[in-house]
Length: 100
Image (cartoon, rainbow, N blue to C red; front, side):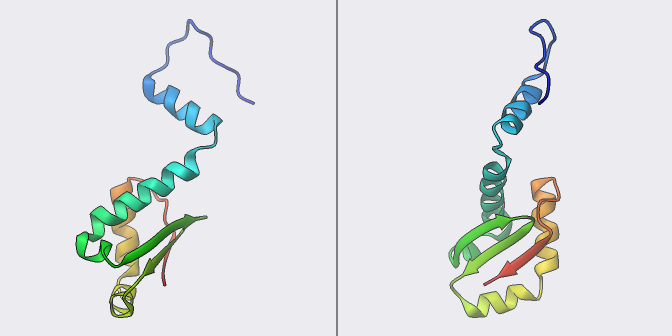
């Protein structure tokens, strides 16, 4: 376990928040929420309307779509979707996108 910093040492608020998130193992939940929000922003309201579920598990983004036509169209651009989402997230969270 990491040693706690002494009270006389100064930490930025960002460092304190990162320590809190890490200590309480909240990264997975925070990443899930960020990915859902980013999907809706990057893909737009038209695709959001047909999105029934989004789940991030071990670097794989599972997206459930209600339209088979849209799923087929998006399947041709999964590498671009992955790239755009990771850029918007400013980190490489997504290794693969699976549309269902």
